Image (tube, rainbow, N blue to C red; front, side):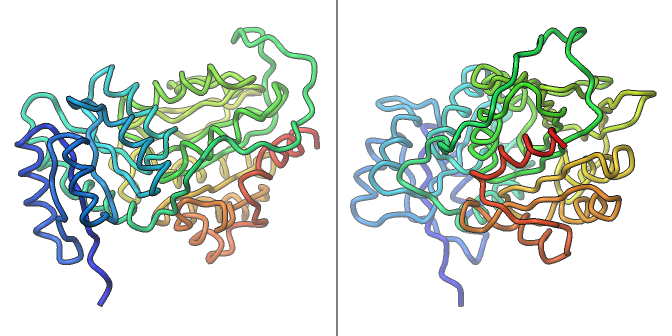
Length: 352
């Protein structure tokens, strides 16, 4: 039999700790190692036995979750799933947690907590299983490589930014926030327009895009319905909605719409990739990065069959090799590259 996943729950809410206890007890492959109301109490319990996965709140007394997370990742890297409230402060802290090494996030409401947690119990269980398979490292800074050649900066004001005749479509999930930061921060401003699906809850994608926009030479923002896909701009699909690319005369635009989840996800990578295969065809580059499950594998195959260039991230540089692995098994990936090669691949695609 497979080893049971040993879980530590750190949350200052007794209601949340009780609910997590019930959920974990209902799963035959999970064991609740301990619960703690704050990181100080958690540290004492971790001295006795170290968990496989930590469920961690971000806003707590005595020590905040981010400080605790950084200590964990520096001393004993461990998969951490963040439990964050849907608040402005909680969202900002959660994005900081991703940068510090958290592998996944799920949200909890500030009102009607038990009812909300019951509605996301299956997502929570899946997040724990995904986290248990994630690779963690002591330090996860952006990868430094030889800089991609920069060109004369172009205006980033929307009505002055040049249109794009090529489109880069990127899909990712667990570990994707770090991967995207590594890629996008190294791109020059003349790259083709980019459309991204990162599995992330509603409200977090806008803050994630805003954070990346402050780090990158290119413009990064959350996609809105009718946005043109422009050179030097990356559009991130909003959480809770699907995003696809359509042709509108001489331009490529995004359609953001509500529909049932695809492959359990909304936004879905498959939805994006299939639309790019149809609208852009051979003028597209598809990239599937780290993540659990198989979302995007069949869509990437559609892109390759339409003549697009298709790339999968390799196992060594993936936090979770699930999504790239499934794409490779289907024959959807024309080439396989490590994460630190991806920026050059995008820049090279734009110069062809």
